[in-house]
Length: 397
Image (cartoon, helix red, strand yellow):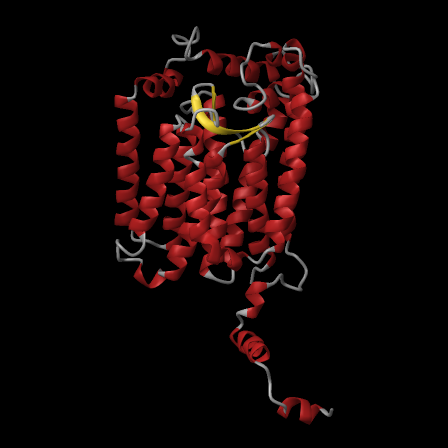
């Protein structure tokens, strides 16, 4: 068949659809770009790899002594964290290889699934309570925290909604109200689970997406005001929450009970000095600092790697958020832009809350430090979110 005959022959419906997509540029959004990845892309890969590997090493260092003391293998938490890291790597590859626009068709089913999963911790025999928070679901020897999945789903929902209704940014009922409802459901469920840190992250993520989308300041300010009033209500009317969230203001007076963890965390950080005691040489893991492998992993980093290690961790998170915002600004379309902004804001808020709690500058909420703290669901979902961010970065302008 000659070239002319090929052009003139009747085309099938699928062929005409492909040609239409190519002319409109839509087909390019549904596959990875063929051009070389940008420096931003490689920067995100390097930072996330560094934080994940450092986290696995620090989990081993901070948990081995207490695990052995409790009659378990000193390698138990290390093996579990490494396993979740491998699962997270598979999740990251999967989300990276999946065109991010494909998630738009799954937003509503994912939202319903995520919120239903958040009800499971309340069911006796299925839910698991850890340190006063009933936020986990038993999976045999492992456990899963549904709120971690909900964070990613809320980002997808808000990004998709605002991208579809971007012409109605000034209409409260069209854009902000649905985001406010989803944020409130996620925050309230986390509050009932006594996982106040995750509730704060839901608020911060939605605020970041709304701000980046250009929703009028009056509505963003109103959303912030409602969130502040909600937090104030929790502090005023929930006695346990009030004591936990305000103990950081009086670390010396409360160091015997509610402020004990923060006090020991500050001692560990002070012991680190400029260069630290060395990996495995810290004293906090000998039972002085509870939850050294999870909520207070930053204190262990500061003690064993010193100010150098602490600044490296803080700088890595700053770099990750900066690169994520570069991806948001360089995305091909609004949905990808809001997706990158929401994920970057999520990592920013969660790291600020965790490090602030460990250093006594913010209330202690029990929130994990992304990529570093022991916690399989946190690590896996954070890496899956990174895959989505990399997919947007791979298709930048």
